[in-house]
Image (cartoon, rainbow, N blue to C red; front, side, top):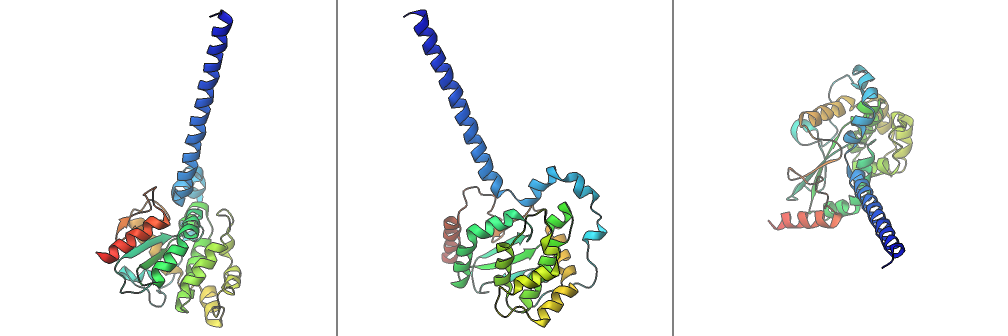
Length: 257
């Protein structure tokens, strides 16, 4: 074999090796993005905006006044808003923040399955509202939206309004939900919710301290971030293989047990 041919083959092998390394790097980035899309909000924010978080005054992000739970609130200290029949065997506990993009992603993917399971009496969901993004980025959008959702619970419209908030979630860096008028405007998308009682509840911040108490309970639970999703107490959202179909199987299995 001539030296020229040997050099040509060596060059080809080197190009192939380089190409394989590029493919491996691309695949690694793809996996990272997939996992990153499911990472809870607080983890993604901590490293990027630590300085901002450190400068946010605690008093500005803490509401005052008596703790008033919304109608029908359940669980310890009345901090859970339940959706579904109480007779359902398994309970899914969801800690969420209406400003959290990862929470919106979870809702978008899993909502049809969750609706079907709760409507059929197979699953009961306990929603806990927190305000992590307010603490990380500043503002009051998480608090205001949480209060408005609690006001919707008083009217028996929590689930529908809950879904509307996620469907209209602004960028987490834009504190659109801090505007009560915007939250009231969005209530018009839920039949029968935009009433004088709902408007007063939103504008008065009737459940602000309740949202803060829920947020304190989240921190005391030492959860890693939002959304935190527990099925009968077991954290299932950490499972990277979790899908709506797998969640459904788990719920149906729990009903048989």
